[in-house]
Every structure is written in C-alpha cells, then in structure tokens.
Image (cartoon, rainbow, N blue to C red; front, side, top):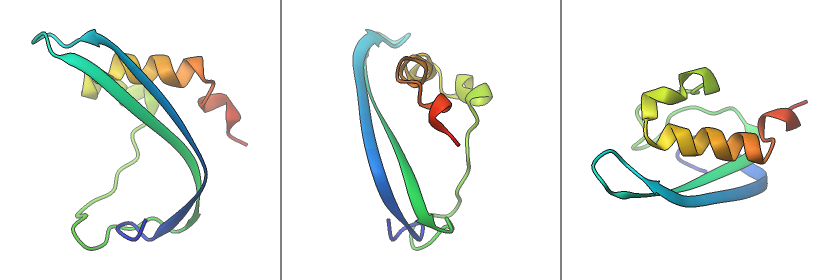
Length: 81
C-alpha cells in the first residue's frame, strides 16, 4: 500500500449486504483485516491517517451497525495478540 507506506500480509475479507440506511438506500459493507509490515504514514494523495476504535464506530452510522456485527461475528477483535 504505497499510499501509506506499508505492506499488507495475511489479508482476510468479510462482507455483508443487508439492511437499509435511514434514506432507504441498501447498504453493502466490506471489511478487511490484515497484518502489516512497515510504519503507516500519509503519502501522496493521503493527507491524514487515523485509527478508529470500536468505541467510536457510531460516528459512521448506519454503516457502523454492520461493521460492529461483522467484527463480532468473525471474532476479529479477539485475534489480536
């Protein structure tokens, strides 16, 4: 990922396509989980990087509901060493 200066390894992909937003649009979500090599830093067209803890997912409602469900269903948070 040249835009942030890292190499991704052990990439896993999860998806969900269900529900509707408050405006009636269908929501489709893809979540990627990976380990990385290198030090993440903004480069090229990326101005800023930010980690979003699960406690702040509601900032992204209505997508946050699907993100939290995917994370919990696939035990993504529990795999961290």
